[in-house]
Length: 134
Picture 1 (cartoon, rainbow, N blue to C red):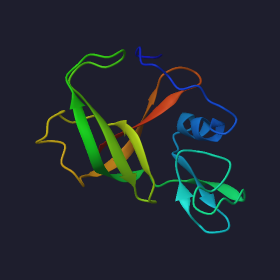
Picture 2 (cartoon, rainbow, N blue to C red):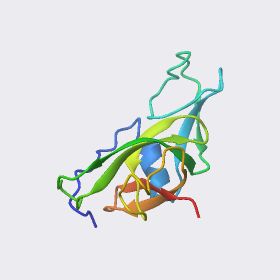
Picture 3 (cartoon, rainbow, N blue to C red):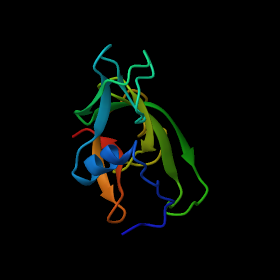
Picture 4 (cartoon, helix red, strand yellow):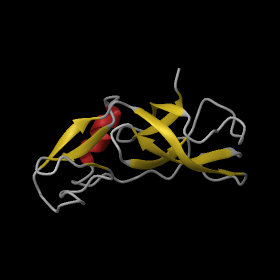
C-alpha cells in the first residue's frame, strides 16, 4: 500500500523497469552496439543513439554519490530523510532514498557501499531504495 508518496506512472518505455522492481530486480538497459549501460529507461542508447538495446538485471550494488537531507515533511516522508544519488556498480546513477540508517551526515558517508531494497507501494509500483550494505 502506498505510504502517501507521489508515485511514478509507468509508460511503455519504462514498464520493464517497474515489472523488474515488482519482481525484486533492478533492471537497466545496455546498448548492443556500444555496450553502454544506462538509466533512466529509454528506447535508444544515450551514448551512440542505437535502438539495439537489451534489458539486463543489475547487481543491486551501489555507492553513495551525493545526497541532501531534507528537514521538511513531504507526502510519504517523515523528516529528516535523505534524497540521494547513487552510482550503480554497472555505472549509471539514479536518484533514490537511503533507508535503514540514521539520516545524518555522520551516517551517510559519500562512497559508502549500498545495496538495493524494494518497497511495494501498490500493485503497480515497487520503489527501489538503497540501504547500507550488510
